[in-house]
Image (cartoon, rainbow, N blue to C red; front, top):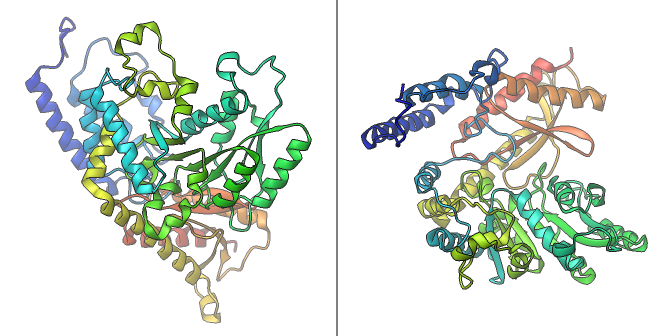
Amino acid sequence: MKDPQDVGDTPPEEFRKQLHELADWIADFRGNIESLRVAPNEKTGPVLAQLPTQPPEDGEPFGKILSDVDRLIVPGMVHWSHPMFLGYFGWTITAPGILGEILSAPLNVNAMTWRTCPAATELETVVIDWLRQWLGLPDDFGGVVYDTASVGVMHALAVAREQIAPSTRKLGLTNRDLPRFRIYTSNQAHSSAEKTAIALGIGEENVIRVQSDEEFRMDVGSLGKTIAQDQQRGFQPMAVVATVGTTSAASVDPIPEIAKICREQKIWLHIDGAYGGGFAMLPEYRWISGGWGMADSIVINPHKTLFVPLDFSVLYVRDLERLRRVFTLVPEYLRGDTVEAEKNYMDYGIQLGRRFRALKAWVIWRSLGRAGIVARLREQIRLANLLTHVIKTDNPETIEARQSVRSRFELAAPVSMGVVCFRWVGSARRGVPTNEEQLDKLNSELVERINASGRAYLTQTTLRGRTVMRIGFGNVLTTEEHLREAWQLIRETADALSPA
């Protein structure tokens, strides 16, 4: 127990010892992560029930705190860094990423203005431009780092709102005889469009979900018709949110065609490339960046595909000054720390306090290099294509195959980047249920049972009204052997669920 009268920090030598202890803990956790359950089991009680209800009066030794992390926290976690975690977009942590996070903690700066930390401001500017170059974005796009893409789209569409209704920054939207504004996105897009509409006073119901085509891409014809119908009814189109890597199937909207409509109608075009945008680094995926130069704003999440630890998202805006004009505000207590000739990142968003996020990106991108990032992205694609082949060849076509215990599966969407959506359609030996609703329940139950087993973690989604299973690759620890193990688990669980 620490002396409650000790008002200083931990003594240097004790702190050094604690750092070594923590380093060993991190290395052991990383080295033994495969031995852990991917998700908690039912026998593990809620973490809340195991924690003291009263806050501590006196300080406790770090060793005891670390021991409680092992005893209470780790068993109650879903381990997103586990190689058998195959849900969502399978983001990952790497050794350089951990080092970058550790390095930024003791520096503990506020990157709100250039003067409050010149290195943080200037490094952020550098890493933003590194990423711009890697993605092939035109040099008239400037960027700013936020935590997530949802925050990025909110800032981008705040600029779109100011463009269509000048002086909203000063006067707001009320009592100005303004039309109802509309935001258009596909029925496969992320829910951040609705949250943005709520936050900006546009209204959730004014986000119009445009139907998608057979490949789950926004249907351009439907977009054009919907915009025309809204204009006839007196609504004002404000923005279109197109997606590169949709949340469920990682599909890519036809950006060039959408951009043409936006140019003709003078509508703000925002591209949500949170997941898929990073794949534009690959020469064979450069096609996904078609039309980007005609966009007004683009968001990329390096914490999804470019190996930066959560959270790190970059919003690019063509002519970044438009973003600054909407959000710049210098209170009197900051005038002494504001240098007009330098970039002050507090002027580009609602945040005043800003973490030194650029440091971890700088560390990991220097550690991996462009070639290392590209190689790891290609491995994700290779595993996704391998799983695709396994799904297709697992469908029995012969009498001999039908007599086996193998289950039957089918792809539910074209395979895009590192995401595979598929559906179990019944057991080869026991027959195929004809009731689609029954199959929906069985597919959902299959995912639930796998996740409850602790051996792997998948997610489920809905495509064309049907429940499907979804696997996302992205973890650098996931290998072909893990994929084989996961597929065997899926087949075994499917056979156990098969109707008699």
